Every structure is written in structure tokens, then in C-alpha cells.
Length: 505
Ligand SMILES: C[S@@+](CC[C@H](N)C(=O)[O-])C[C@H]1O[C@@H](n2cnc3c(N)ncnc32)[C@H](O)[C@@H]1O
Image 1 (cartoon, rainbow, N blue to C red):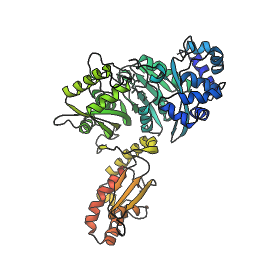
Image 2: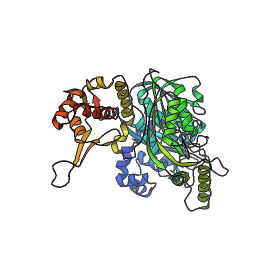
Image 3: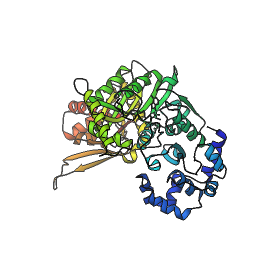
Image 4: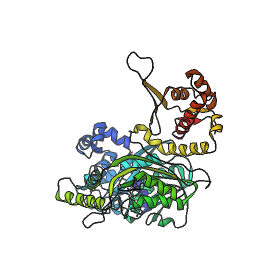
């Protein structure tokens, strides 16, 4: 990458106010939504009215796939100039885009960030299936992982499989230094341009397979949307570098989990997306397999399965993702290859979800090893999941140092995002269902009996857990010991999930 040219591109993108908000104000919400579905027509029509605007020209070039003439290129790149844009590999000799350069905006605990992301042209702009060496732009999975990255300040972050570099932008917001790796040399070139045009100088790019570029080094945080897509190793099946890390089945996810143990500093955490196979026979349960990888690696882990697909659904998802249409002979051949591979290896389903790992500070401390299925929609809560999971690890530590007697002596608080919902049979005074709803985190819904609901409602930090249990037993006219025995594990679960918080740490 030519840094001087990249600086000039940066100046032009800023001068044009090439931001998500600016484009939305130019073409409106409906055209914005249409574009997200791959439909360029409404945006094209709206931009016809703002022809001379540099932001509109950049959008026509990079997002709508329109070649620009020399005058328009001159207005779009007043500093870089059309020749600079060609030398930087952004456009061809006819003024058509060779790369996708788009604004990207994100909000986290530190506020809003407006960035630019450089990637390969997508399927809509190319008008054909993606080439094997395609470098992916910001997709749904990228956004999911971005929400899983904690926002606490940290030393060195590893962005494993950086692609277009989007996670490095997020990681650099809270990390002193970022090491971004990829097996694709092309991805590293585009990531270099992405971080440069955003003025981010703390990212070091390294080439190589998984953890190989790290050799013996350790980092404080790992973030990765690894190339986990299970791909049959058969002739004729395209191997997309952006999603396929070259292993069989889900071995790449296992390798990343085990590798994290060798490359995290004590107390360091990893935040990953992944796939896990469910296989026939004993020990084939997908979540139990991930649990085993984590436990054998000596890590703390919290795994959330968001979706489980049958082999048929899985094959269809990833064949379509590569741009092959259902009902074509190519699709049929690929589908058969996927189903044969799953059948031969006894795979009955594939789970997809999030993995948070931590290398314990104290090797002898009780481990957190939690796997669960949580498929309810997250809505706006999704952006702070990384911080939420870290709070879960901290709650685990807090509880691990307190037996039931000590916990009964503690005061706890109800988290401010929790509300309660009650359902009644018409005319009845007693509710048939009491449900606690978490607003943030995983937006959990927890069914509570009157005792738990009464307990949670009284958690204002005035009385200890034990005092509350005693008062409730009195009120409900039940045995105090039995109620305490019921409540203590429930309180531990609610503390871990962030529904209750320790009044003092
Ligand atoms: C799913 S993309 C993720 C891109 C980006 N981090 C994001 O979140 O959008 C996976 C990336 O891993 C890279 N990759 C593929 N095989 C790899 C390997 N064996 N080692 C390291 N990176 C690999 C791909 O080139 C691709 O950039």
C-alpha cells in the first residue's frame, strides 16, 4: 500500500463527508433499506438529484457500481486525483470501481465511530458468484462479533482472520496495540488500507495460518470470526478463503479454542464466533464437544448456541452464500457433496454461536464452564454483549470465593434493566405466570415463583440475602431453611446472568 496515496484518499473521504448518516440523508431510509437487500435502484434514483455532491459520486462509484467519467472522478477525488485512485487500485482505466470502499458506523460504550471499510466488490456489484480469493466486507457475522468485543481498556489484542480489518478498528478503540493476522495476503493489503484511511496506527498486520504468526507471543484479548464454514473436501467444491480455513468439519474452531489457551496472558479473554458439529453416537453432542475442548485447554468458557441447522439447511445456507442459485445443476452437485460429507462423518446437525473464553488468573480457582442454547432475538441489546459476558466472568469469580453461608451474608441489587411481567386468569387474584425480563445482555426471560419474584423485588441493597429469605419465609408462611435452599442456587444463577448484582465487590 502506498501510504501517501492512502492519506490523500482519507482526506477526500473526509472532505466528502462520506458517512452512513450523510448517505442516508441523501437517499432516504427506504432506499437505504433497499440497498441492504441488494436493490440499488431506489438509491440510484435518489442520487440523480444530488449529482455534484462528492459523497453522492463516491456512493455511485463504490456502492452502486456505476463507472464515473473523468470530471466526476476529479470531483470525487480532488486530492487523490483519478490517477491516484487508479494507482491505489480503487478504479480501473474506465473509471469503474475495483474495490468496495464504504462508510461504516458503530456505537459502543465509548460513543459513535464513523469509519471507512475497504473490501472486495460484493456479488451485487460483480454480477456473478464470488471468486475464491474474495475479501469479505462488513457482514452480519462481523457486526455480531463487533458486539461481542468488550470495551474495557486492554494491552494487546489479536484480530485473528482480519479480512477487511473491521474488527481491528473496533479492537483498536480499547486496545493499546492490535495484531491483525490473515492467511490471505490480499486480505492483509485491504486491511492495511482500511486501518490507514481511518488514521488508526496501532495495528500491526501479520501473514500466516491461525496462530502461526504469533509464534510464542501472548496477547490480552483475542477476537475472531474465524473461517469456520464446514466445507466438503471434494473436487468441484469451491474453497472460499474468506470462510473456509482449510480444515475438516469443525476442527478449525477446536484449533482456535485450544490455541487461545497457548496465546492468552493470564486473565486474558477470547471472543469468537463458531460452528460445532453434532455427531452420531456417544460424545457427539455439539455443545458437549465444545465444552470438552475448553475444559481440556484449561480455560474458563461461556458458549451460547444461537442457532442449530440440519445438514440440509446448513448446505443450502453456504451454497447460496457463495452465489450459487438453488435449482441449478451447480447447486445440486454442491448440495450432494455437502450431504455426502455430513453423512460419511455422521454429522446430524450444526450449531452456530458465540464463544467467550478466559485464561484463569489463578489455575486452581473453580472454572466457569457454561454452555447454553439461547435463540431469542437480542434487538438493541446485542451491541454490549462482550461487556455483559465479562461481567459474567467477574460474577463467577465473586461467587466462587463465597460459599452459601457467605453468600447469605451479602447484599445484592436488582439490575436496572430488569422488569417484571405478570399474567392472570381473568378474575383471579394470584398470577398464573410471573416473568422477569432482562432489557440488556441476552434479554433473558426468567419464570419466577412468588418467592423468587418477591425476593428479586426486594433486592435494593438494604437487607442481606439471608435476611430477605427469612423475611419472605415469614410472609409466605413456609419453612425458612427450605426457602433458603431453593433461593441460593437461583440467586447464583441470576448473579451470573446479570439480573442481580453484588452490592459491593
Ligand atoms: C469470516 S472472515 C472474517 C473477516 C473479518 N474479521 C470479519 O469479522 O468480518 C475469516 C477470515 O479468515 C481468513 N482465513 C482463512 N483461513 C485462515 C487461516 N487458516 N488462518 C488465518 N486466517 C484465515 C480469511 O482470509 C478471512 O479474512
